[in-house]
Amino acid sequence: MRLSPPDHAEPTPPTSADALSELARVWRRYEGDPDGAIRAITETGCTAIGVARCSVWLLSDDRQSLRCADLYERDRGVHASGVVLAATDYPRYFAALTNEGADRGDRRSRRSAHQRVLGRAT
Image (tube, rainbow, N blue to C red):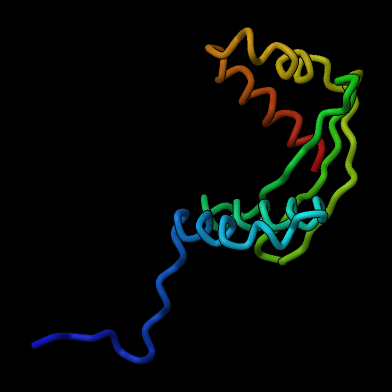
């Protein structure tokens, strides 16, 4: 005898592979719309790794500021952007960003610096 799930069963939550497959499937929709693509990435990021918030930050060409291109809050379904962090306000964090390639072994210290900045920026 084969059992099937009851009609009232909760749908299976999407997996990270499902979320990434969907993003790969629809990527052409965002050609010419980088802001839309970034919003899709943050929404997919929340789904893929099961977090409440996901964001994309862009480092300025002169490496003196970070701008939040998008912050997605899954529970509220809202996007925000525009927060700017200046290197002069977070010198240790920016030093860690600019030295990342040379100092890949120090992930714990970068993660700690990242968490300190996020606590102040949100």
